[in-house]
Image (cartoon, rainbow, N blue to C red):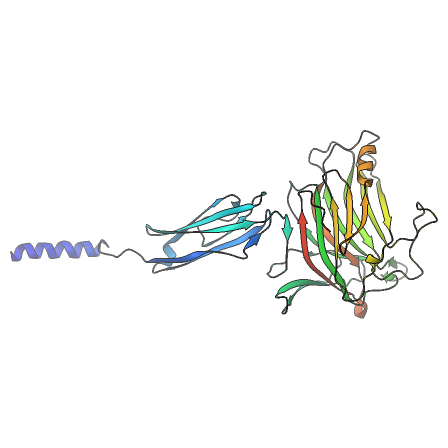
Length: 369
């Protein structure tokens, strides 16, 4: 009997030395987390899973999704999920494996029928500094509990500065519409701005403008195409009076202009087609927040709304597309590359302070107001 006990003790000690007697690792998880609860189409969303385990270095993660796609390596405890192009509720799932012990959690992601929106509540900012802009700053409104952008266009050698959202989506095309809330909070000029030093002084009018930079259709059937859409206005009027549109009866003054910029690859020429407006909605007082919306619907009709008021409803783009390319008409689609908000640049103590908030975009034919 003593001999058998001796053999059993030896076997147990050997098994323990080989690790056979180790307990399974402990694995505890709460849920899959994400920044936000509602997301826009094609948005890139950070997702992560917090795990408690007694062997964290051994943890391996597998991410799966029902709709959309992941853009980072699978084995990490966080990932980036890109929402699909269609709205709906999608499931994101993560499984953690610690030496064979697996736990799984899922999260539902509510994707709205909106192409893009931002309340500037988190970093990094979705709008970046453009040429000639010295700063773009996130400001958190403690009362509203969200953020907005504050910009200061400080440049001694440039006449224009801007902030912009580059969509980096090769499939994004008209119909498209955008809206944002805009204000000037200090120092916006009433007259022209002179930039540079003699003899190279450049004069800039005191306008704001709102622009889509367009990419050429990958099929490239047309030599003549639209590479930008711009809406420009005088928020404080203009010293010496507003400009006049000689194409209107009596040379009517205008305080806003919607234009398309046409580029011809064959000739190298750049031309503009414009529609003018004079409306009191384009007058901005200091700290007066107003929405400005630009839309092109599926039929290529163009709309501008300011503070909910329709200022422009025009078929000029439809007319141009019919008559373009020597009368052959336009065969190419219009692809949206970048959304830009621009303003006159200044220097020193005269630098303007402007506010930009609640940008939103649709590409389903919605006309934003």
